[in-house]
Image (cartoon, rainbow, N blue to C red; front, side, top):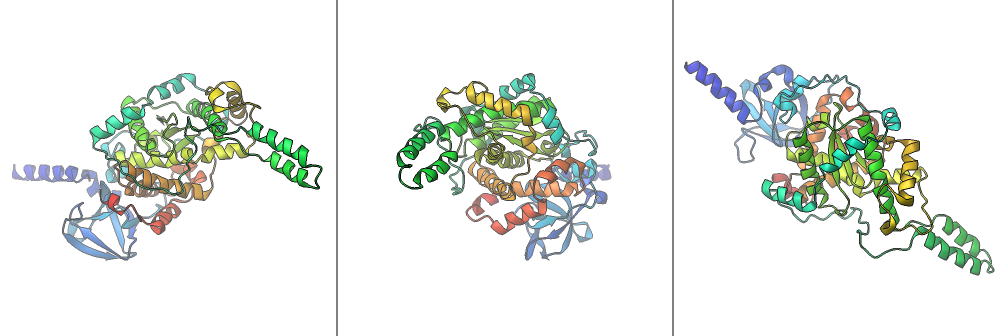
Length: 446
Protein backbone atom coordinates (compact mmCIF):
# COMPACT_ATOMS: atom_id res chain seq x y z
CA UNK A 1 0.00 0.00 0.00
CA UNK A 2 2.83 2.39 0.86
CA UNK A 3 4.42 1.84 -2.59
CA UNK A 4 1.07 2.62 -4.22
CA UNK A 5 0.81 5.91 -2.30
CA UNK A 6 4.41 6.71 -3.20
CA UNK A 7 3.80 6.15 -6.91
CA UNK A 8 0.67 8.29 -6.78
CA UNK A 9 2.55 11.08 -5.01
CA UNK A 10 5.26 10.98 -7.66
CA UNK A 11 2.68 11.19 -10.44
CA UNK A 12 0.91 14.13 -8.79
CA UNK A 13 4.24 15.91 -8.37
CA UNK A 14 4.97 15.53 -12.07
CA UNK A 15 1.59 17.00 -12.98
CA UNK A 16 2.12 19.89 -10.56
CA UNK A 17 5.44 20.70 -12.19
CA UNK A 18 3.92 20.72 -15.66
CA UNK A 19 5.99 17.72 -16.76
CA UNK A 20 3.48 14.89 -17.08
CA UNK A 21 4.58 11.30 -16.59
CA UNK A 22 5.74 11.02 -20.16
CA UNK A 23 8.42 13.60 -19.39
CA UNK A 24 10.44 10.88 -17.66
CA UNK A 25 10.61 8.98 -20.94
CA UNK A 26 14.15 9.42 -22.27
CA UNK A 27 12.87 9.13 -25.86
CA UNK A 28 10.97 12.36 -25.31
CA UNK A 29 14.03 14.40 -24.39
CA UNK A 30 15.06 17.20 -26.73
CA UNK A 31 18.72 18.24 -27.15
CA UNK A 32 19.77 21.82 -26.45
CA UNK A 33 22.91 23.77 -25.54
CA UNK A 34 23.51 26.50 -23.00
CA UNK A 35 23.26 29.81 -24.80
CA UNK A 36 24.71 32.23 -22.24
CA UNK A 37 28.20 32.54 -20.73
CA UNK A 38 26.93 31.04 -17.48
CA UNK A 39 23.54 29.70 -16.42
CA UNK A 40 22.18 28.87 -12.97
CA UNK A 41 20.13 25.69 -12.79
CA UNK A 42 17.42 25.95 -10.13
CA UNK A 43 15.76 23.14 -8.23
CA UNK A 44 12.33 24.49 -9.19
CA UNK A 45 10.78 26.81 -11.79
CA UNK A 46 11.38 29.90 -9.67
CA UNK A 47 14.26 32.39 -9.37
CA UNK A 48 14.11 31.99 -5.59
CA UNK A 49 14.58 28.20 -5.77
CA UNK A 50 18.05 26.97 -4.74
CA UNK A 51 20.75 26.79 -7.40
CA UNK A 52 21.77 23.16 -7.87
CA UNK A 53 24.27 23.57 -10.71
CA UNK A 54 26.02 26.10 -12.93
CA UNK A 55 26.47 25.45 -16.64
CA UNK A 56 28.78 27.21 -19.08
CA UNK A 57 28.13 28.26 -22.66
CA UNK A 58 27.71 25.41 -25.18
CA UNK A 59 27.24 22.77 -22.49
CA UNK A 60 24.83 20.11 -23.86
CA UNK A 61 21.59 19.59 -21.97
CA UNK A 62 18.44 17.51 -22.39
CA UNK A 63 15.07 19.25 -22.13
CA UNK A 64 12.42 17.01 -20.62
CA UNK A 65 9.46 19.34 -20.09
CA UNK A 66 8.07 22.84 -19.78
CA UNK A 67 6.76 24.78 -16.79
CA UNK A 68 5.60 28.21 -17.83
CA UNK A 69 8.68 30.00 -19.18
CA UNK A 70 11.06 27.44 -17.68
CA UNK A 71 12.54 24.30 -19.23
CA UNK A 72 12.88 21.18 -17.09
CA UNK A 73 16.24 19.47 -17.54
CA UNK A 74 17.18 15.92 -16.69
CA UNK A 75 20.28 16.34 -14.54
CA UNK A 76 22.84 13.71 -13.41
CA UNK A 77 21.73 11.26 -10.73
CA UNK A 78 18.12 11.60 -11.83
CA UNK A 79 17.66 15.11 -10.48
CA UNK A 80 15.44 17.67 -12.19
CA UNK A 81 16.71 21.17 -12.81
CA UNK A 82 15.10 24.28 -14.29
CA UNK A 83 16.47 27.00 -16.54
CA UNK A 84 14.78 29.98 -18.14
CA UNK A 85 13.54 29.55 -21.72
CA UNK A 86 16.23 31.86 -23.14
CA UNK A 87 19.10 30.35 -21.13
CA UNK A 88 19.41 27.48 -23.61
CA UNK A 89 18.88 27.08 -27.31
CA UNK A 90 16.85 24.18 -28.63
CA UNK A 91 18.67 22.29 -31.38
CA UNK A 92 16.98 21.71 -34.71
CA UNK A 93 16.00 18.09 -34.90
CA UNK A 94 17.50 16.27 -37.88
CA UNK A 95 14.17 14.58 -38.44
CA UNK A 96 10.62 15.37 -37.54
CA UNK A 97 9.74 14.75 -33.92
CA UNK A 98 6.57 12.84 -33.21
CA UNK A 99 3.39 14.30 -31.74
CA UNK A 100 3.94 11.98 -28.76
CA UNK A 101 7.27 13.63 -28.03
CA UNK A 102 5.75 17.09 -28.21
CA UNK A 103 2.87 16.10 -25.93
CA UNK A 104 5.37 14.72 -23.46
CA UNK A 105 7.54 17.80 -23.43
CA UNK A 106 5.15 20.69 -23.62
CA UNK A 107 1.97 21.60 -21.83
CA UNK A 108 -1.09 23.12 -23.49
CA UNK A 109 -3.66 21.61 -25.79
CA UNK A 110 -1.18 19.19 -27.36
CA UNK A 111 0.32 18.41 -23.94
CA UNK A 112 -3.07 17.39 -22.58
CA UNK A 113 -3.31 14.41 -24.86
CA UNK A 114 -5.48 15.80 -27.67
CA UNK A 115 -5.53 13.39 -30.58
CA UNK A 116 -3.75 14.93 -33.57
CA UNK A 117 -3.06 13.78 -37.09
CA UNK A 118 0.37 12.74 -38.24
CA UNK A 119 2.61 15.59 -39.30
CA UNK A 120 2.59 14.38 -42.92
CA UNK A 121 -0.86 15.89 -43.52
CA UNK A 122 -0.43 18.47 -46.28
CA UNK A 123 -1.04 22.07 -45.26
CA UNK A 124 -2.43 25.02 -47.18
CA UNK A 125 -0.27 26.12 -50.10
CA UNK A 126 -0.36 28.96 -52.62
CA UNK A 127 -2.41 27.00 -55.14
CA UNK A 128 -5.09 26.40 -52.50
CA UNK A 129 -5.25 30.10 -51.69
CA UNK A 130 -5.18 31.09 -55.35
CA UNK A 131 -8.16 28.92 -56.28
CA UNK A 132 -10.27 29.04 -53.09
CA UNK A 133 -13.58 30.84 -53.34
CA UNK A 134 -15.02 33.23 -50.79
CA UNK A 135 -16.80 31.20 -48.07
CA UNK A 136 -19.59 33.50 -46.93
CA UNK A 137 -20.89 31.12 -44.25
CA UNK A 138 -17.47 30.70 -42.66
CA UNK A 139 -16.72 34.40 -42.92
CA UNK A 140 -19.97 35.27 -41.14
CA UNK A 141 -19.05 32.81 -38.41
CA UNK A 142 -15.59 34.38 -38.12
CA UNK A 143 -17.06 37.85 -37.65
CA UNK A 144 -19.59 36.55 -35.13
CA UNK A 145 -16.71 36.01 -32.68
CA UNK A 146 -15.44 39.59 -33.01
CA UNK A 147 -15.32 41.47 -29.71
CA UNK A 148 -15.59 45.14 -28.88
CA UNK A 149 -12.63 46.76 -27.13
CA UNK A 150 -14.75 47.12 -23.97
CA UNK A 151 -15.64 43.42 -23.93
CA UNK A 152 -11.99 42.47 -24.36
CA UNK A 153 -10.96 44.87 -21.59
CA UNK A 154 -13.55 43.38 -19.24
CA UNK A 155 -12.19 39.89 -19.92
CA UNK A 156 -8.64 41.17 -19.35
CA UNK A 157 -9.57 42.63 -15.98
CA UNK A 158 -11.24 39.37 -14.97
CA UNK A 159 -8.11 37.48 -16.04
CA UNK A 160 -5.78 39.78 -14.11
CA UNK A 161 -4.03 41.17 -17.19
CA UNK A 162 -2.75 44.61 -16.21
CA UNK A 163 -1.76 46.96 -19.00
CA UNK A 164 1.38 49.07 -19.00
CA UNK A 165 2.73 51.98 -21.02
CA UNK A 166 5.65 50.73 -23.09
CA UNK A 167 7.12 52.96 -25.84
CA UNK A 168 7.65 51.65 -29.36
CA UNK A 169 9.36 54.27 -31.49
CA UNK A 170 9.12 52.53 -34.88
CA UNK A 171 5.48 51.44 -34.68
CA UNK A 172 3.44 52.69 -37.63
CA UNK A 173 1.10 55.51 -36.65
CA UNK A 174 -1.47 56.06 -39.39
CA UNK A 175 -4.04 58.80 -38.96
CA UNK A 176 -6.88 57.41 -36.87
CA UNK A 177 -10.40 57.16 -38.27
CA UNK A 178 -12.17 60.46 -37.74
CA UNK A 179 -8.95 62.44 -37.99
CA UNK A 180 -8.50 65.47 -40.19
CA UNK A 181 -9.37 64.61 -43.77
CA UNK A 182 -6.41 64.63 -46.13
CA UNK A 183 -6.46 65.50 -49.81
CA UNK A 184 -7.13 62.49 -52.01
CA UNK A 185 -4.68 61.22 -54.60
CA UNK A 186 -6.84 62.69 -57.35
CA UNK A 187 -7.00 66.09 -55.66
CA UNK A 188 -3.23 66.15 -55.24
CA UNK A 189 -2.75 65.22 -58.88
CA UNK A 190 -5.17 67.96 -59.90
CA UNK A 191 -3.13 70.53 -58.00
CA UNK A 192 0.12 69.29 -59.50
CA UNK A 193 -1.35 69.30 -62.99
CA UNK A 194 -2.47 72.91 -62.60
CA UNK A 195 0.98 73.89 -61.38
CA UNK A 196 2.60 71.99 -64.22
CA UNK A 197 0.54 73.88 -66.78
CA UNK A 198 1.39 77.22 -65.20
CA UNK A 199 5.11 76.53 -64.89
CA UNK A 200 5.68 74.65 -68.14
CA UNK A 201 6.52 77.99 -69.74
CA UNK A 202 9.60 78.24 -67.47
CA UNK A 203 12.16 75.74 -68.67
CA UNK A 204 11.93 72.13 -67.40
CA UNK A 205 9.89 72.71 -64.23
CA UNK A 206 6.81 71.37 -65.94
CA UNK A 207 8.59 68.07 -66.61
CA UNK A 208 9.71 67.77 -62.99
CA UNK A 209 6.15 68.29 -61.80
CA UNK A 210 4.94 65.73 -64.33
CA UNK A 211 7.19 63.09 -62.74
CA UNK A 212 5.89 64.04 -59.31
CA UNK A 213 2.32 63.77 -60.63
CA UNK A 214 2.92 60.13 -61.56
CA UNK A 215 4.00 59.06 -58.06
CA UNK A 216 1.78 61.21 -55.86
CA UNK A 217 0.81 59.25 -52.73
CA UNK A 218 -2.70 58.41 -51.59
CA UNK A 219 -4.24 59.97 -48.54
CA UNK A 220 -4.30 58.11 -45.24
CA UNK A 221 -8.07 57.71 -45.58
CA UNK A 222 -7.69 56.13 -49.02
CA UNK A 223 -5.06 53.68 -47.78
CA UNK A 224 -7.25 52.62 -44.86
CA UNK A 225 -10.29 52.28 -47.14
CA UNK A 226 -8.38 49.88 -49.38
CA UNK A 227 -7.21 47.84 -46.39
CA UNK A 228 -10.76 47.58 -45.05
CA UNK A 229 -12.02 46.42 -48.43
CA UNK A 230 -9.24 43.88 -48.97
CA UNK A 231 -9.33 42.28 -45.52
CA UNK A 232 -12.72 40.55 -45.77
CA UNK A 233 -12.08 39.44 -49.36
CA UNK A 234 -8.77 37.79 -48.46
CA UNK A 235 -9.89 36.32 -45.12
CA UNK A 236 -13.02 34.87 -46.74
CA UNK A 237 -10.89 33.05 -49.29
CA UNK A 238 -8.51 31.68 -46.68
CA UNK A 239 -11.62 30.24 -45.08
CA UNK A 240 -12.56 28.84 -48.47
CA UNK A 241 -9.29 26.88 -48.36
CA UNK A 242 -9.68 25.79 -44.71
CA UNK A 243 -12.80 26.34 -42.59
CA UNK A 244 -12.84 27.51 -38.99
CA UNK A 245 -12.10 24.88 -36.37
CA UNK A 246 -15.27 23.73 -34.64
CA UNK A 247 -14.27 24.77 -31.14
CA UNK A 248 -16.27 27.77 -29.96
CA UNK A 249 -14.30 28.16 -26.74
CA UNK A 250 -11.01 28.35 -28.63
CA UNK A 251 -12.45 30.86 -31.13
CA UNK A 252 -13.69 33.07 -28.31
CA UNK A 253 -10.32 32.78 -26.56
CA UNK A 254 -8.25 34.04 -29.50
CA UNK A 255 -10.64 36.98 -29.92
CA UNK A 256 -10.44 37.86 -26.23
CA UNK A 257 -6.65 37.80 -26.27
CA UNK A 258 -6.23 39.26 -29.75
CA UNK A 259 -8.62 42.16 -29.30
CA UNK A 260 -6.93 43.03 -25.97
CA UNK A 261 -3.52 43.14 -27.68
CA UNK A 262 -4.82 45.08 -30.69
CA UNK A 263 -6.28 47.72 -28.37
CA UNK A 264 -2.71 48.45 -27.27
CA UNK A 265 -1.35 49.09 -30.76
CA UNK A 266 -1.27 52.32 -32.73
CA UNK A 267 -4.29 51.14 -34.74
CA UNK A 268 -6.94 50.09 -32.20
CA UNK A 269 -9.77 51.37 -34.42
CA UNK A 270 -9.46 48.59 -37.02
CA UNK A 271 -12.21 45.90 -36.96
CA UNK A 272 -9.86 43.35 -35.39
CA UNK A 273 -11.08 39.79 -35.92
CA UNK A 274 -9.34 36.53 -35.01
CA UNK A 275 -9.95 32.88 -35.82
CA UNK A 276 -8.48 29.37 -35.79
CA UNK A 277 -8.67 27.45 -39.06
CA UNK A 278 -8.90 23.67 -39.18
CA UNK A 279 -5.45 22.73 -40.44
CA UNK A 280 -2.82 20.60 -38.71
CA UNK A 281 0.11 22.60 -40.08
CA UNK A 282 1.83 25.19 -37.88
CA UNK A 283 1.23 28.62 -39.39
CA UNK A 284 -0.61 31.93 -39.09
CA UNK A 285 -1.93 34.52 -41.52
CA UNK A 286 -2.62 38.25 -41.39
CA UNK A 287 -4.88 40.04 -43.87
CA UNK A 288 -5.02 43.83 -44.28
CA UNK A 289 -7.45 45.68 -42.07
CA UNK A 290 -7.10 43.56 -38.93
CA UNK A 291 -7.99 39.94 -39.82
CA UNK A 292 -5.74 37.32 -38.18
CA UNK A 293 -6.06 33.55 -38.61
CA UNK A 294 -3.91 30.85 -36.99
CA UNK A 295 -3.98 27.13 -37.65
CA UNK A 296 -5.25 24.51 -35.25
CA UNK A 297 -1.79 22.89 -35.41
CA UNK A 298 -0.16 26.05 -34.09
CA UNK A 299 -2.85 26.68 -31.48
CA UNK A 300 -2.45 23.15 -30.10
CA UNK A 301 1.28 23.77 -29.64
CA UNK A 302 0.69 26.76 -27.34
CA UNK A 303 0.70 26.20 -23.58
CA UNK A 304 -0.97 29.29 -22.17
CA UNK A 305 -2.52 32.68 -22.90
CA UNK A 306 0.91 34.31 -23.10
CA UNK A 307 2.03 32.01 -25.91
CA UNK A 308 -1.27 32.55 -27.76
CA UNK A 309 -0.74 36.30 -27.33
CA UNK A 310 2.81 36.03 -28.70
CA UNK A 311 1.63 34.45 -31.94
CA UNK A 312 -1.27 36.86 -32.35
CA UNK A 313 0.99 39.81 -31.55
CA UNK A 314 3.35 38.90 -34.40
CA UNK A 315 0.48 38.80 -36.89
CA UNK A 316 -1.13 41.94 -35.45
CA UNK A 317 2.11 43.77 -36.17
CA UNK A 318 1.94 42.81 -39.85
CA UNK A 319 -1.51 44.42 -40.07
CA UNK A 320 -0.47 47.49 -38.07
CA UNK A 321 2.58 48.01 -40.29
CA UNK A 322 0.60 47.27 -43.49
CA UNK A 323 3.18 44.68 -44.54
CA UNK A 324 0.95 42.56 -46.80
CA UNK A 325 -0.97 45.58 -48.04
CA UNK A 326 2.27 47.17 -49.24
CA UNK A 327 3.00 44.02 -51.24
CA UNK A 328 -0.46 44.31 -52.79
CA UNK A 329 0.14 47.93 -53.67
CA UNK A 330 3.37 46.98 -55.43
CA UNK A 331 1.43 44.36 -57.39
CA UNK A 332 -0.58 47.10 -59.00
CA UNK A 333 -3.63 47.90 -56.89
CA UNK A 334 -2.67 51.55 -56.68
CA UNK A 335 -5.48 53.66 -58.10
CA UNK A 336 -8.92 54.70 -56.94
CA UNK A 337 -11.66 56.89 -58.35
CA UNK A 338 -11.26 60.64 -58.73
CA UNK A 339 -13.24 61.69 -55.69
CA UNK A 340 -12.99 58.62 -53.45
CA UNK A 341 -12.62 59.17 -49.69
CA UNK A 342 -12.77 56.80 -46.74
CA UNK A 343 -16.03 58.34 -45.53
CA UNK A 344 -17.68 57.39 -48.82
CA UNK A 345 -16.58 53.77 -48.85
CA UNK A 346 -18.39 50.77 -47.42
CA UNK A 347 -16.20 47.72 -46.80
CA UNK A 348 -16.77 45.32 -49.69
CA UNK A 349 -18.68 47.88 -51.75
CA UNK A 350 -18.22 51.11 -53.69
CA UNK A 351 -15.23 51.87 -55.89
CA UNK A 352 -12.63 50.59 -53.43
CA UNK A 353 -14.67 47.42 -52.88
CA UNK A 354 -14.65 46.84 -56.62
CA UNK A 355 -10.86 47.09 -56.75
CA UNK A 356 -10.58 44.64 -53.85
CA UNK A 357 -12.81 42.12 -55.63
CA UNK A 358 -10.80 42.54 -58.84
CA UNK A 359 -7.57 41.95 -56.92
CA UNK A 360 -8.69 38.70 -55.28
CA UNK A 361 -10.28 37.52 -58.52
CA UNK A 362 -6.81 37.68 -60.08
CA UNK A 363 -4.62 36.67 -57.11
CA UNK A 364 -6.94 34.90 -54.69
CA UNK A 365 -5.69 34.95 -51.10
CA UNK A 366 -2.13 33.79 -51.84
CA UNK A 367 -0.84 37.11 -50.50
CA UNK A 368 -1.20 35.40 -47.09
CA UNK A 369 1.75 33.16 -48.00
CA UNK A 370 3.93 35.87 -49.51
CA UNK A 371 7.48 35.94 -48.24
CA UNK A 372 7.94 39.34 -46.64
CA UNK A 373 11.22 41.15 -46.17
CA UNK A 374 13.29 39.52 -43.41
CA UNK A 375 13.33 42.79 -41.50
CA UNK A 376 9.53 42.83 -41.48
CA UNK A 377 9.52 39.44 -39.76
CA UNK A 378 12.18 40.46 -37.24
CA UNK A 379 10.23 43.66 -36.56
CA UNK A 380 7.02 41.69 -35.96
CA UNK A 381 8.81 39.48 -33.42
CA UNK A 382 9.96 42.62 -31.61
CA UNK A 383 6.50 44.18 -31.82
CA UNK A 384 4.97 41.05 -30.34
CA UNK A 385 7.29 41.32 -27.33
CA UNK A 386 6.27 44.95 -26.82
CA UNK A 387 2.56 44.16 -27.14
CA UNK A 388 3.03 41.35 -24.60
CA UNK A 389 4.64 43.76 -22.15
CA UNK A 390 1.89 46.33 -22.69
CA UNK A 391 -0.91 43.86 -22.00
CA UNK A 392 0.22 42.00 -18.89
CA UNK A 393 2.09 39.08 -20.47
CA UNK A 394 5.76 38.13 -20.48
CA UNK A 395 7.79 39.09 -23.59
CA UNK A 396 9.71 35.81 -23.26
CA UNK A 397 6.59 34.02 -24.48
CA UNK A 398 7.64 34.86 -28.04
CA UNK A 399 10.99 33.16 -27.42
CA UNK A 400 9.22 30.07 -26.09
CA UNK A 401 7.02 29.78 -29.17
CA UNK A 402 10.05 29.95 -31.49
CA UNK A 403 11.86 27.33 -29.38
CA UNK A 404 8.87 24.99 -29.65
CA UNK A 405 8.76 25.36 -33.42
CA UNK A 406 12.47 24.52 -33.53
CA UNK A 407 11.79 21.36 -31.51
CA UNK A 408 9.38 20.11 -34.18
CA UNK A 409 12.33 19.50 -36.49
CA UNK A 410 13.89 21.14 -39.52
CA UNK A 411 12.10 18.68 -41.80
CA UNK A 412 8.68 19.07 -40.21
CA UNK A 413 5.82 18.89 -42.69
CA UNK A 414 3.79 20.95 -40.23
CA UNK A 415 6.21 23.85 -40.71
CA UNK A 416 6.81 23.51 -44.46
CA UNK A 417 4.89 26.64 -45.50
CA UNK A 418 6.23 28.70 -42.62
CA UNK A 419 9.81 27.81 -43.53
CA UNK A 420 9.11 29.07 -47.07
CA UNK A 421 7.88 32.47 -45.92
CA UNK A 422 9.90 33.26 -42.77
CA UNK A 423 13.61 33.50 -41.88
CA UNK A 424 15.10 30.40 -40.23
CA UNK A 425 14.01 30.04 -36.62
CA UNK A 426 17.55 30.26 -35.28
CA UNK A 427 18.03 33.55 -37.15
CA UNK A 428 14.91 34.91 -35.44
CA UNK A 429 16.13 33.75 -32.05
CA UNK A 430 19.57 35.23 -32.73
CA UNK A 431 17.99 38.59 -33.55
CA UNK A 432 16.07 38.57 -30.26
CA UNK A 433 19.23 37.68 -28.34
CA UNK A 434 21.22 40.48 -29.99
CA UNK A 435 18.45 43.00 -29.40
CA UNK A 436 18.01 41.91 -25.80
CA UNK A 437 15.20 43.15 -23.59
CA UNK A 438 16.30 46.75 -23.02
CA UNK A 439 13.31 48.53 -21.53
CA UNK A 440 11.42 45.27 -21.05
CA UNK A 441 13.51 43.60 -18.32
CA UNK A 442 10.96 44.02 -15.55
CA UNK A 443 8.25 42.47 -17.71
CA UNK A 444 10.37 39.36 -18.28
CA UNK A 445 10.08 38.55 -14.57
CA UNK A 446 6.33 37.95 -14.78
